[in-house]
Length: 516
View (cartoon, rainbow, N blue to C red):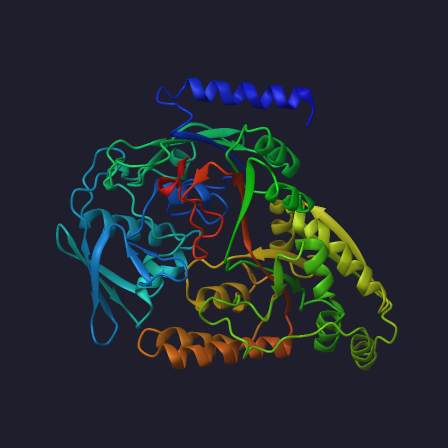
């Protein structure tokens, strides 16, 4: 990092520190974050700003980390019950909660928030597609009525589209939120927002849990794209927590006098979508050849420094639905050559374009490994590292002109396999959202829907259906599932209380943290 850049970073930090009167080294921290903001509207947000939104807004319930005694933690709700047919869920709400604007939290806010999200219909609003109506029983009791027995608790605990917002915002839209305004109940409110630069997650004095005990009170977020800059800020003591450092630097951070790395379970995985609507990838045998040509072990070693495992399918191991009953492809160059010959491409002889998000250092590291191995079977790969938004636009414009292979990092919206299986591979017609393989299989769509409608009443049967659905797509190979990854947080040793929860990826819940 140049002296000029260091000076710029320090000057921007100083301005924001002075803007927060309660700043002190014992109660406050700097977070150098690579996670940008796409939308601060809690009804629309569906990207990496989750890192901040989960500290500003709250849901009725929250999925607990693995190993907890209970599946859910009660947040804005204190209990819930379900009807025998699974079509009605009644939530009892917490009293004494206030929104950041001073409004009291009541059943009206729950109804307003979810109906607002449904009406806007963007981001992850589809998770409420089976909600028939919300009934206010009294100020602190609300009933959700469903069209089918969907897993409502998981939906209510979703990482996206389930935040409760103050009804006082009325008809304010995303433009209002994206100016740095918020209307949550969480422990922090956003201040001094400068898009793409920096902002503060500042202590909300009226937070319902209170501020007794050890807590981080203010977090200065410095948006920092470069992994090397994050590393240098951590090692220099300018940041207590960073999101991403160069892959070959983790060992030195683990051994540092003042630094360490926390590891935890993750429901995140990397995949490569094949463009099934354009030759030669419209041929299933060609796709099978390519998945056998992917050097999974090399990718894990070089791309992730060993901190990953080969994926089996769209649902990561450890999450409900991620099991060893899902078929897994193995690296086998000779079999790949044989399949190419059977597909009418002996010796390969064709060229493919592979795109990845230029912001993603892991993809930049392992894309050339795929390129090198594909060359052994006669397939030339042109790699293009482009901005995520550009890559996204290219894939969504027209399958006939889109890239051949699209690398993607994915994490689920809520902790049931349906959302992942539905989002990634359902038939979306001519306007694909996440189905960047442009895959169409009515039997698959029917199977995952049956599982979804069964999971509330018979999770064991639903699990079998989810496994069957994953094996269906493994047979057709619209996607190469590459690796399931560990979540990693490089941090200062003095920062304590960081809890990693795979249901909420890349989210540091700051309220439970403190500086020793």
